[in-house]
Length: 317
Image (tube, rainbow, N blue to C red; front, side):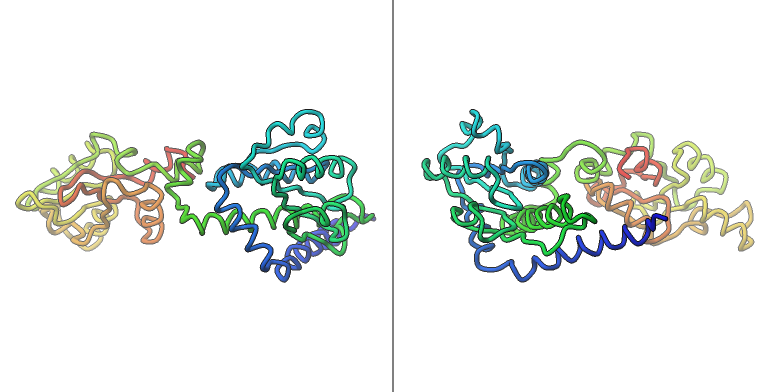
């Protein structure tokens, strides 16, 4: 009978061990490759064959979204015309487990004849690729997670991890920040988290306010008109507090009657954020303090109130 848990556990253990075993291999050569990529004038062209080609495509996407211009070239297509993709100032990373594939052996001399610097991400340091590369990123694994020790599993996990390590080092070396990532990745929920600001989610009618001596009736009417379950409280045109649905309930529980004024109902230490703050930061603040509304300020001026639901409607999470 198939033991699914045992097989899955063994696979994950072997692949995690393969990645952990890369740590001692990250040294002077890795640093030299990183510096080379950091200073290059062209692009990094990443190539491979078979499963390694698929890893190459993923790493191209990672590099491009994190500030390092990259392009994918299939090793088999390269020797049938696509080698024209590689320009004089480009660098090539060739990914291969064996380092001895026929396509790799055909491609490497063509690159060397054009004085293109070659980085071999290879799992066999005695291979043709390793011997002819200018730099080597060693991704040797002791065993594939495949029960037959044949299908690329641990080896592709190691290739992916080594490429990610290189990409994240380049990010830090360039000072690549969330704002830069947003420019590269403006679409989807991830992009929205990085560029959507409170002023983008706040509706024009979401700036309810009452004076400090307003009656309970006026407070309730203003909260209803704003449709955000809260209202700001002002005194001499300055915000002095906030009243939420929860504040009203607590006031009633504490015995305040219908003749209560806004100043008796309000929380005099409202959570506020500037109107140009990221919506995701407001969400995190609400989550931290278990609140549903946050007061939005434009400098020292009250701009409005954003409800948790306003942020969720944007599809950020």
